[in-house]
Image (cartoon, rainbow, N blue to C red; front, side):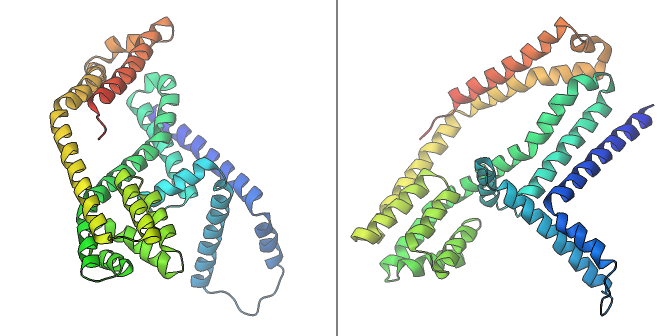
Amino acid sequence: MLLIYVAVWLAVALAIFGLTGSVVLLVVQPQRRVYSRVRQFAATAEAATPAQETQVRKDQRAALFAELDARWASGVKAKDLSLDLSRAEWHLTLTEFALIRAATAFGLTVLLWLLAPRFWWLSLLPALFIGWRLPLAYLHWSVSRRIRRLDSQLADILNILAGAVRSGSSLFQALDRIAREAPEPSKTEYTRVMRAISLGAPLDQALRRLAERVPTEDMEILVTAITIQQQTGGNLAHILDLIATTVRERHRIQREIQVLSAQQRLSAWLLTALPIAMVGLLYLINPDYIGRIFQPGLILLIPITGVLMLILAGFIMNKMASIDV
């Protein structure tokens, strides 16, 4: 019986995928169908090799993805998503990321249905929603982790910049030294700055794009200070030393706050995860007993209210334990 259900799910998924692909091909590139039909009756000088045919198919797929990305890139959310992909250093297009989200949603739905076939109707919509949002949450987590690494390396980079400027190097030469010698991920970001300047972009514009990719207060202060110094003049090495000192003190205070609030944050995570873990454990031990609260009817208000209260309580406890510096 289980194999029959799995086969039905796979057949439905393949049908949906085929229908979606057909609609995309019909809407996006109708001229390709006309060209392929005409090519059947047109004589060619020489037959294409298998390698050439493979390259043509790759180019066609790339053109299809590029056109889909161009259609989606007009929206504000698509621009923000593209910027997040750039911040996380994920070499994915918008279409590829959307396909990953769809595959994750379908896979999580099938997994929950296999684990709890009796309550598939209850887990269908939450599984689709969570599976669709899960890659996006992982993307945001990757962006936050990379930005934290960039922020932690900023003080050392400022000291190197100040030392290079104090020794007689220009700001361009100092940035080029950072792009060659800095650890990752700072090396990648400052290499982008040097590449933009080499292609003709003004220094302030290249630094402004750096601040967009690394949206932290310390980076904003650095870019603003360098821009003002380039316009009005002044001792750049002394300015960089002051900013480095400010950044180091900010990081020291943040570490002290994290140590002092570690117990509160751990308590918030434990209190939020404990009811979910208990329900899962009871389902593994006696599914008939705990399954009564998931039956259709007014009794569904119990798990729904519990989930909403857990989300609200976790949000409040995390806000109480987080302190901005």
